[in-house]
Length: 393
Image (cartoon, rainbow, N blue to C red; front, side, top):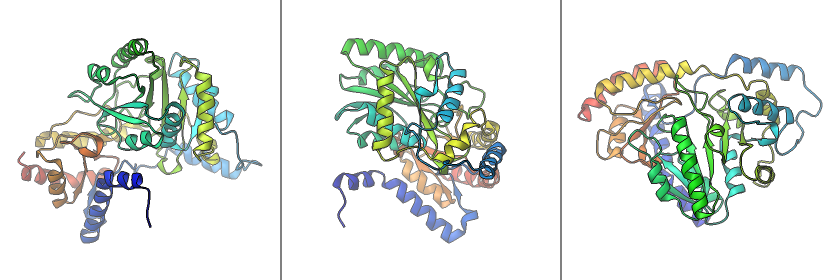
């Protein structure tokens, strides 16, 4: 059966994902699942907070008539209000439920935003290393991704961003804490970015919207994660509860617009329309009801801090070079071999599964997802020691 040529090309571009999955499956078949150390997927193994289980039971024990029917495409009013309340607490902006759309996770939120903003040929700046799906999401809506490298500490390079802005630039996606690096962008950098973008907007007579992708915003290790609404006027938040409530399979998230955003009411109309016509229709009803009362709840970040420290401290002593993450649950070390794929294959010799940096637009690095059990991390440490020796560290 023939498929669209464009889709076939996208599959080829993402073939490293399939290849890593296939190689991992082969290793598990040969050695057993407990002897394979899989650090490839950002799929948390920790369970949701106990408050979530209590809320789920309360809802199940007290079913309300009509609770599974359609609702406004933007979501339940009380859910949107609960989300807005926390956003208002964390910013200096008067955020209300009118500025929130509940979505099927952050992926849906990004697609809704891009569908709302982009005309064919519009350019969207993404900072490398980046979440691989950004490229495909932008392409979904006729946009053109423009990749801009970050600096040696994986922080935004404002001069490089300025050089990449053209009359076709429509948006810029940032992700902090970042996947795959774990770095957090400080308030000073974000406010400097706002000044830069406003200057370029006036110079080129365009509008540039900053889309802040924030699924890891509540997982930080002491370093503040600034609210984008307080730093950049023309800004949006897209996020999910996949990480902070450990609910990746429930596909529940939201998009939120800064009240200071130009023509914000028109944007909200467009976003609600796009949520419907893209086929999401509305975020899952049960999941919305579940998270309404949990907006002040999150998993304990210290759980991930401990996992980070186990790996970061051990790998640093072995000679691996990396920026220490300020949040999230990823490490992004530099490959000790010039060809990171050669290092990835060498790691598989020790049954350690990693993701090449090329998949994130940063060849020469590799990603470790440490959202796995402590016991697995600890068992892997001797193998990391052998791997480091084999790689010449």
